Length: 296
Image (cartoon, rainbow, N blue to C red; front, side, top):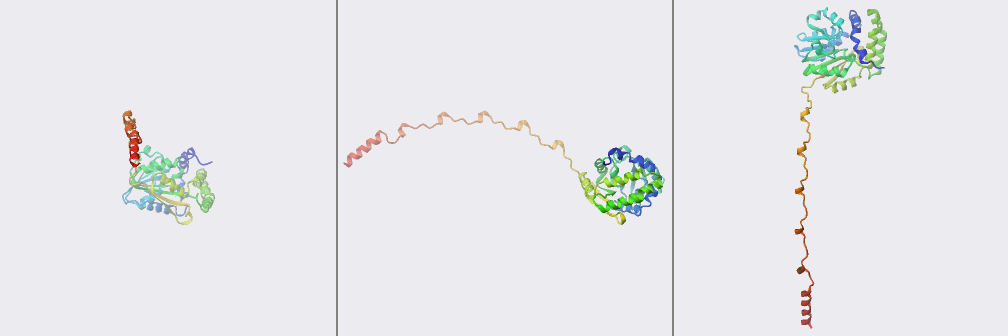
């Protein structure tokens, strides 16, 4: 049975339990920080951009953004209070603002646009309603603002599924038991990746959500075909149909035939043969008789 919204809504509380040891496990992942910097670069922001790090966790992705855009205004948001507490203890806290907030309702956390860009690392597959979340992200971006989803996707590849299964079963889940004393969240994360969209499906989902210039970029190393940078852009102008523009026929415009316009034949116009017009009458016969007499 697929993961439901209730299960996903409980994910932040599960991250609270592992916040103090989370960085130990991600540190075992070769290329983890380098890949985050690569996705930050692919966001393609100006130097002094305003950037949102959505689902920022302990701030590792926020540090990646700062390393690429040192002059940017960066806001990090995560629904796990313990993960945000951890982020605030790091050096990156002097270069970014961290806020506890839900990706499904950023306004409730005081997060308002417009932003030049959004980075969302390992987050979109964990929200209760992906389509609603995408709509919210699009609205906080300024026109032509860009979003990069740094995310796993294995659904379209048997090889990628096999590699992901081997890594999670052999390293991530045992590593979670060793570092955090629990495997619950790591078993959930393994399953959430298996259930997430394929690359093509997620690209189509982004297009349906109103994003344009949707592109997917791969990573190098063992995560090639598993981890991706999904980059998209808010359109420069969005056209929303206005109800007032709809054309509704007006009853007064309907054409109803008028009785006075009907054409009724007039009796006076009927043509009645005139006796004087008949051919072969008495006078004609008399003339023929006279002609016959003269010939005789």
